[in-house]
Figure 1: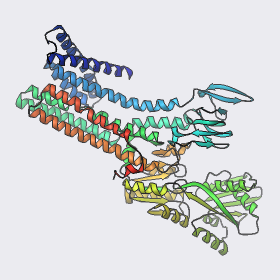
Figure 2: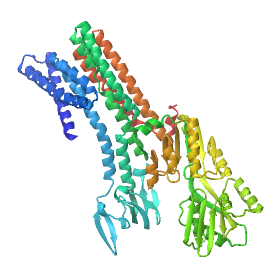
Figure 3: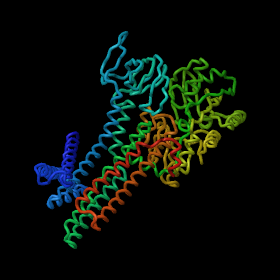
Figure 4: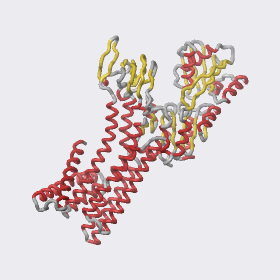
Length: 630
């Protein structure tokens, strides 16, 4: 790669010097017949001939692979310029092609730089606690389970859990969030994040290629290699364009026998700008998204996102915080509340469901000892059966308990209905076949949820559908507060899949937003899928097309905005190419420019679409910019 770059840079430098000296000779600064004039012309000829070699080699390799590229048209044009002794024209075309090759190298280098930047965030050596002592070892030698010491100013080298200490950590490298996060005992920390103050002892849980940083690097690399429909169309279009240009040039020569006219036409049309500008545009957009904590799995995803009109979303952990709180426990018999809480906590020990975590937190706050069950079986989305010592427990939805033969009295049903009217969630607990208590829980709606849904509508999203396993009342409360168009409640994971199939049939392309764990199958079925809070979650990163590294819903309209803007710029480049080519052909046919003018015109106009791409870097991502995109 570097050798190619250095060759093109050297070629461009010598071409520019030769053209400058040739121009000085033409304008009369010195005589073309003088020694300086002859030397400058000699260099112009030699460099023009040398410049043809990589073009012909590239065209030959492409033809061998049964592919037609712009280098074929450029090679033919250059061959004609050399035969006609049009050295200046050859020099300008070589200059243009060298520039295009450098921009192409820049496109690849841009991705490599993103990866290199991320790799630089990994420390070379790590402090590891070994007994009463500390040892420093290379990062590659860290093993799962080892205790890592992180001091103020250190980059955290692995993904793990804090077992001792307190610190303020900057997670912007992964999430894009500007505010530091406080880490204490039990907190999760992630590779590449920066310890701003304090110190931590961290137990390593993921090392090497399994860390969040390593997965981000792999995703960026994968994304840079994927081609879009636009790129594929551009490649096919280029093949037809080249064929038509060559046939037209031959016909014009047979009719006019004017080789200068044919040469001028070839010099105007042998452009390489689109082939570079299109992939460069997507690379820039993906890298900008990554800086905001939005990991997009390829340009094809970025391209599909612009057409999404229907969003399907989970509720818990997506529209709501996913952190449920037990508001109260209502006893329905003569079993003490502490025993009811203990029973529910036994069922919750091995579950990651928000309700289970809320019950465990409630038990801890009441200083109730929680035992590990002897046997346990979880039915996702419904509830848990557990056995401890001589007792059997059922905890979960009321319908789950009823399906297992638990009697729900009229008094209990009335109490449950009253609590659900306020949009609260209910989890029931039965001990040895008898309903003993219900837990009343609430899950806060995420900050910005209502604003984000409104913002996506300004970007073209027409319909929001919520799928949830919660009851009708809870679903209605959330949907009403944030502006959801329709919702479906009391769903099991397999029910969500069926609903998504129906929605796709009814609405066409849809986007799905979930937590990436319970919703992995549903995410895979959607045309574009968003995983919320993917930082530290392998399932989220694997399941979704777009992984949002931070639990901030505002990243969703940002991603849509970037998609629309990048595609708009690609379309602009097609228009720029068509207009500039049309003007150039008109100037040739009307005799305004000859071969030299055509090559200069081509050289200057080829930079316009490439430079147009860099507008993406200047985009300001905030809701005020969305109003301009419909």
